Length: 96
Image 1 (cartoon, one colour):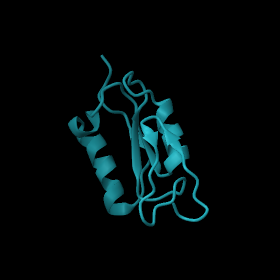
Image 2 (spheres, rainbow, N blue to C red):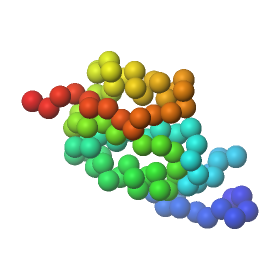
Image 3 (cartoon, helix red, strand yellow):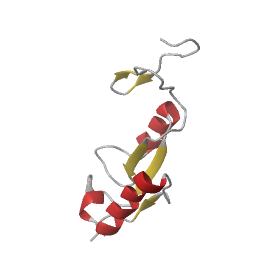
């Protein structure tokens, strides 16, 4: 383990550091969280970000994977990879 690094425990087990990676620092990682999804509660998104860093992309729906089915949402997420910026999320699939 790199000098000064501390082991962290995540829901799926201990975090492993890869060469050059530092837990908790912001980087190119984007964590997508669906605000109303029951399978992976939105609160886990901020907990994961606090542990491993990155940026949060919030989808205001309850449908896992909806970003790819909603053209405006997909464009917003993909723009991160070309600009390095995200406006924070999108509406997702409209709730009936």
